[in-house]
Image (cartoon, rainbow, N blue to C red; front, side):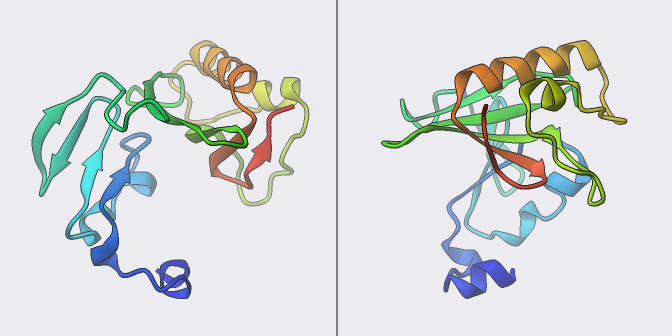
Length: 148
């Protein structure tokens, strides 16, 4: 809330909220955005009611929603093409605990343990694909980083 306030953004100004997966630390507060359409890996909702299923191209050619799994069964991420680079909003496909040192090499990042992962093999495949596809990654927990 403080960051929105610093940028003079009101909760009513938010039109879309993307949920990378259904874990509570990523989805609990979606209801505080009264005008927002909530976008998940396969649908968008308004006021808790499904109003449209999508195939990942809901936002057009510059933003794609990609469904995957590994950390949870409902994982999805955003691939965003900007003029400067390809960005991934990755949710918990990449994440570090507060006290963890954030790895910097692809091998370390791919193999970083996820104690909540449902399927470590699928998680590593998804991480590898993302690291080989984008330039910049915004993880669910940790600092954004440049894909090596």
